[in-house]
Image 1 (tube, one colour):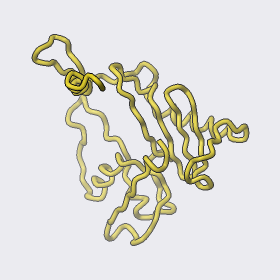
Image 2 (cartoon, one colour):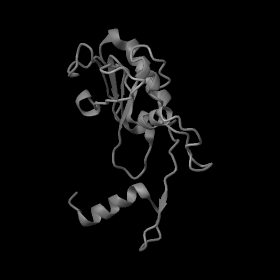
Image 3 (cartoon, helix red, strand yellow):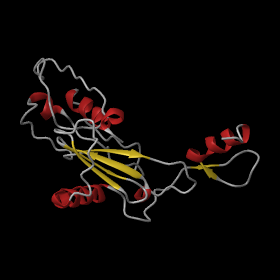
Length: 188
Protein backbone atom coordinates (compact mmCIF):
# COMPACT_ATOMS: atom_id res chain seq x y z
CA UNK A 1 0.00 0.00 0.00
CA UNK A 2 2.98 2.30 -0.46
CA UNK A 3 3.53 5.00 -3.06
CA UNK A 4 5.45 2.84 -5.52
CA UNK A 5 2.69 0.25 -5.75
CA UNK A 6 -0.46 2.37 -5.60
CA UNK A 7 0.34 5.48 -7.61
CA UNK A 8 -0.46 5.27 -11.30
CA UNK A 9 0.03 7.94 -13.94
CA UNK A 10 -3.19 9.65 -14.94
CA UNK A 11 -3.03 11.82 -18.02
CA UNK A 12 -6.21 13.34 -19.38
CA UNK A 13 -6.65 15.26 -22.63
CA UNK A 14 -9.82 17.32 -22.68
CA UNK A 15 -9.62 19.84 -25.56
CA UNK A 16 -11.39 23.09 -24.82
CA UNK A 17 -11.41 22.40 -21.10
CA UNK A 18 -8.02 21.32 -19.77
CA UNK A 19 -4.91 23.45 -20.12
CA UNK A 20 -2.05 21.62 -21.88
CA UNK A 21 0.72 20.60 -19.49
CA UNK A 22 -1.23 21.46 -16.33
CA UNK A 23 -0.56 19.34 -13.24
CA UNK A 24 -3.01 18.69 -10.41
CA UNK A 25 -1.93 17.49 -6.97
CA UNK A 26 -5.36 16.32 -5.80
CA UNK A 27 -5.36 12.54 -5.26
CA UNK A 28 -8.16 10.88 -7.21
CA UNK A 29 -9.10 7.26 -7.77
CA UNK A 30 -9.58 5.24 -10.91
CA UNK A 31 -13.28 4.95 -10.00
CA UNK A 32 -13.45 8.67 -10.81
CA UNK A 33 -12.80 8.01 -14.52
CA UNK A 34 -16.32 6.86 -15.42
CA UNK A 35 -18.14 9.76 -13.70
CA UNK A 36 -15.69 12.11 -15.43
CA UNK A 37 -16.43 10.64 -18.85
CA UNK A 38 -20.17 10.87 -18.21
CA UNK A 39 -19.73 14.53 -17.25
CA UNK A 40 -17.45 15.41 -20.17
CA UNK A 41 -19.82 13.77 -22.65
CA UNK A 42 -22.85 15.51 -21.08
CA UNK A 43 -24.62 12.18 -20.65
CA UNK A 44 -27.70 12.04 -18.47
CA UNK A 45 -29.82 9.27 -17.08
CA UNK A 46 -29.74 6.68 -14.37
CA UNK A 47 -26.52 4.70 -14.07
CA UNK A 48 -28.18 1.91 -12.05
CA UNK A 49 -29.33 -1.18 -13.90
CA UNK A 50 -32.40 -1.58 -11.69
CA UNK A 51 -33.89 -0.67 -8.28
CA UNK A 52 -31.48 -3.04 -6.52
CA UNK A 53 -28.45 -1.24 -7.94
CA UNK A 54 -26.02 0.97 -6.11
CA UNK A 55 -25.49 4.63 -6.99
CA UNK A 56 -22.40 5.32 -9.06
CA UNK A 57 -19.18 5.51 -7.06
CA UNK A 58 -16.57 8.11 -7.89
CA UNK A 59 -16.68 11.81 -8.69
CA UNK A 60 -16.21 13.84 -11.84
CA UNK A 61 -12.73 15.30 -12.24
CA UNK A 62 -14.07 17.99 -14.58
CA UNK A 63 -13.51 20.84 -12.07
CA UNK A 64 -9.88 19.73 -11.65
CA UNK A 65 -9.38 19.59 -15.42
CA UNK A 66 -10.75 23.11 -15.79
CA UNK A 67 -8.71 24.48 -12.87
CA UNK A 68 -6.08 22.06 -11.48
CA UNK A 69 -5.06 24.36 -8.61
CA UNK A 70 -8.43 25.67 -7.39
CA UNK A 71 -11.12 23.49 -9.00
CA UNK A 72 -14.04 22.65 -6.69
CA UNK A 73 -13.47 18.93 -6.21
CA UNK A 74 -16.58 17.17 -4.87
CA UNK A 75 -14.74 13.97 -4.01
CA UNK A 76 -12.88 13.03 -0.85
CA UNK A 77 -9.59 14.67 0.07
CA UNK A 78 -7.87 11.28 0.11
CA UNK A 79 -7.66 8.38 -2.32
CA UNK A 80 -8.53 5.06 -0.69
CA UNK A 81 -6.62 1.87 -1.49
CA UNK A 82 -7.64 -1.53 -0.14
CA UNK A 83 -5.75 -4.79 0.04
CA UNK A 84 -8.12 -7.70 0.49
CA UNK A 85 -7.01 -11.08 1.79
CA UNK A 86 -8.35 -14.40 0.59
CA UNK A 87 -10.95 -15.64 3.01
CA UNK A 88 -14.29 -17.37 2.93
CA UNK A 89 -16.05 -14.68 4.96
CA UNK A 90 -15.58 -11.16 3.62
CA UNK A 91 -15.74 -8.39 6.22
CA UNK A 92 -14.70 -5.02 4.79
CA UNK A 93 -14.04 -3.62 8.26
CA UNK A 94 -11.14 -6.04 8.80
CA UNK A 95 -9.10 -5.52 5.63
CA UNK A 96 -5.94 -3.48 5.04
CA UNK A 97 -6.35 0.13 3.86
CA UNK A 98 -4.35 3.20 2.92
CA UNK A 99 -5.49 6.79 2.58
CA UNK A 100 -3.38 9.11 0.43
CA UNK A 101 -3.85 12.86 0.69
CA UNK A 102 -1.77 15.51 -1.09
CA UNK A 103 0.99 15.38 1.53
CA UNK A 104 0.37 12.28 3.66
CA UNK A 105 -0.20 8.53 3.52
CA UNK A 106 -1.90 6.61 6.30
CA UNK A 107 -1.95 2.80 6.35
CA UNK A 108 -3.95 0.58 8.69
CA UNK A 109 -3.25 -3.13 8.70
CA UNK A 110 -5.69 -5.89 9.63
CA UNK A 111 -3.82 -6.48 12.91
CA UNK A 112 -4.25 -2.82 13.95
CA UNK A 113 -0.72 -1.69 13.15
CA UNK A 114 -0.51 1.73 11.54
CA UNK A 115 1.89 3.71 9.39
CA UNK A 116 1.93 7.44 8.73
CA UNK A 117 4.22 9.16 6.22
CA UNK A 118 4.66 12.79 5.25
CA UNK A 119 5.22 12.17 1.57
CA UNK A 120 6.37 15.70 0.74
CA UNK A 121 9.49 15.23 2.88
CA UNK A 122 9.66 11.41 2.82
CA UNK A 123 8.71 10.38 -0.74
CA UNK A 124 10.00 6.82 -0.28
CA UNK A 125 8.00 6.38 2.94
CA UNK A 126 10.92 5.25 5.07
CA UNK A 127 10.14 7.16 8.28
CA UNK A 128 6.94 5.88 9.90
CA UNK A 129 5.57 8.75 12.02
CA UNK A 130 2.65 6.80 13.52
CA UNK A 131 4.39 6.39 16.89
CA UNK A 132 5.63 9.97 17.11
CA UNK A 133 3.69 11.93 19.77
CA UNK A 134 3.74 15.13 17.70
CA UNK A 135 1.59 13.41 15.03
CA UNK A 136 -1.20 12.12 17.30
CA UNK A 137 -3.73 14.65 15.97
CA UNK A 138 -2.97 13.82 12.34
CA UNK A 139 -3.15 10.09 13.08
CA UNK A 140 -6.53 10.61 14.77
CA UNK A 141 -7.71 12.61 11.77
CA UNK A 142 -6.82 9.80 9.34
CA UNK A 143 -8.38 7.15 11.58
CA UNK A 144 -11.65 9.09 11.51
CA UNK A 145 -11.48 9.68 7.76
CA UNK A 146 -10.91 5.99 7.10
CA UNK A 147 -13.65 4.88 9.49
CA UNK A 148 -16.13 7.23 7.80
CA UNK A 149 -15.49 5.55 4.44
CA UNK A 150 -15.75 1.94 5.56
CA UNK A 151 -18.90 -0.11 6.10
CA UNK A 152 -19.83 -0.54 9.74
CA UNK A 153 -18.47 -3.72 11.39
CA UNK A 154 -20.76 -6.63 10.67
CA UNK A 155 -22.30 -4.91 7.63
CA UNK A 156 -21.07 -7.47 5.15
CA UNK A 157 -22.41 -6.92 1.64
CA UNK A 158 -24.48 -9.76 0.25
CA UNK A 159 -22.58 -12.06 -2.07
CA UNK A 160 -23.98 -13.37 -5.35
CA UNK A 161 -24.84 -17.06 -5.08
CA UNK A 162 -23.24 -19.63 -7.34
CA UNK A 163 -24.38 -23.24 -7.30
CA UNK A 164 -21.97 -25.78 -8.76
CA UNK A 165 -23.52 -28.52 -10.89
CA UNK A 166 -22.13 -31.27 -8.69
CA UNK A 167 -22.99 -29.84 -5.28
CA UNK A 168 -25.93 -28.58 -3.27
CA UNK A 169 -23.73 -26.14 -1.33
CA UNK A 170 -24.09 -22.64 -2.72
CA UNK A 171 -20.88 -20.58 -2.84
CA UNK A 172 -20.44 -16.98 -3.79
CA UNK A 173 -19.24 -16.27 -7.33
CA UNK A 174 -16.21 -14.58 -5.82
CA UNK A 175 -15.23 -17.81 -4.06
CA UNK A 176 -16.01 -20.28 -6.85
CA UNK A 177 -12.70 -19.85 -8.67
CA UNK A 178 -10.75 -20.53 -5.47
CA UNK A 179 -12.35 -23.94 -5.00
CA UNK A 180 -11.59 -24.89 -8.58
CA UNK A 181 -8.01 -23.61 -8.31
CA UNK A 182 -7.19 -25.36 -5.05
CA UNK A 183 -8.72 -28.61 -6.33
CA UNK A 184 -6.14 -28.66 -9.15
CA UNK A 185 -3.29 -27.01 -7.13
CA UNK A 186 -3.45 -28.53 -3.62
CA UNK A 187 0.11 -27.38 -2.86
CA UNK A 188 -1.11 -23.76 -2.96
